[in-house]
Amino acid sequence: MEQPATEEDVNRVTEQILDIIKKTETYNTYLFYSRRLKNNFPALYERMKVFAKEARELANAPESEIMDRTDAFREKYDDFLDKEAVDCFMRSEMALVRMVQKVSTRVVNAMGIENFLSDDGDGGDSSS
Image 1 (tube, rainbow, N blue to C red):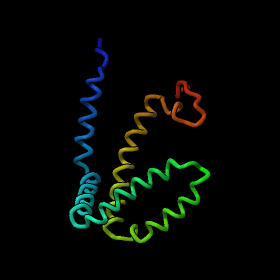
Image 2: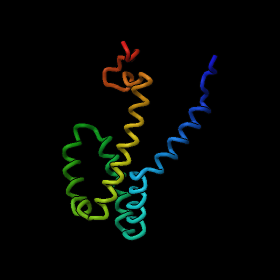
Image 3: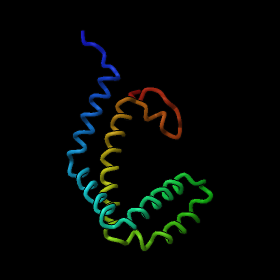
């Protein structure tokens, strides 16, 4: 009879997945553009950190404020987002985020916990 897997087994396999992700072209492209932005355009890199923080704050803003704040946000960063180094970094980062989200979504769906993460909060077994 097969022994049940342990949390240690899960952690080991997770490390293997991370090692594989780090070998992908997607991750290495992200690293290239991240380092390029940081080393060659330090002012843009610092502005990117502020941009990311403000984008997270905007994403968590009350719904009643989102439209006005989004317009102001776009106006504030319009010239910044047009910079080639910023655009390349953001595209590479988005590709990496999408890859990681696909893995996460597969785990969530396979475990049947997607129902708990949905708006209806219905829970239960996803196979029924």
